Length: 134
Ligand SMILES: C[S@@+](CC[C@H](N)C(=O)[O-])C[C@H]1O[C@@H](n2cnc3c(N)ncnc32)[C@H](O)[C@@H]1O
Image (cartoon, rainbow, N blue to C red; front, top):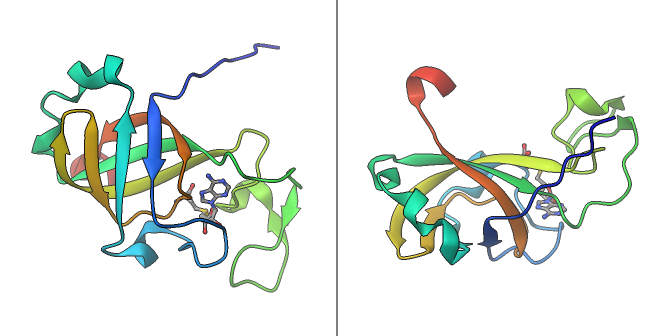
C-alpha cells in the first residue's frame, strides 16, 4: 500500500467556528467572506491567479470524526453510501469547494462563498476553468 504524505500550503480563515451554522455548500455561503493565508514559500505560485474569478480549494476536514460507510446526508432521511455523498467524515477527509476570488495581497487571498471551518488546512488551489469544470 502506498502511504501518501501531504503538507498544507496554508490555512483558510472563515467566520465558521463549528459545524452548526456552517453552510453545507458554497452555494449556501453566498457572499460570506474568508481569507487564505498562504505559507510565504508558495507566494510566487500565485502569479496570474488574479485573472480567474473563481478558484477550486482542496483542503482537509481537520475536525471530522471517524467515518462510516453509510451516512445520513444533510437534509435527507435515508442513509446513503459515503461515496455518494459530500459528507466530511471520510477515509481521506478531503474537502473541495469553489470560492470566488476577490483579491490577492501578498500571501493573503480574499475569497467569498466559504463553506469550511475556520483554521481548515489548505492542500491546494486550482483555477476554476468554466469550459473544463462546469
Ligand atoms: C457537506 S461538507 C461540503 C464541503 C465541500 N464543499 C465538499 O463538497 O467537499 C460542508 C460541511 O463540512 C463541515 N466542515 C467544514 N469544514 C470542516 C473541517 N475543517 N473539519 C470538519 N468538518 C468541516 C461543516 O459542517 C460544513 O457544513
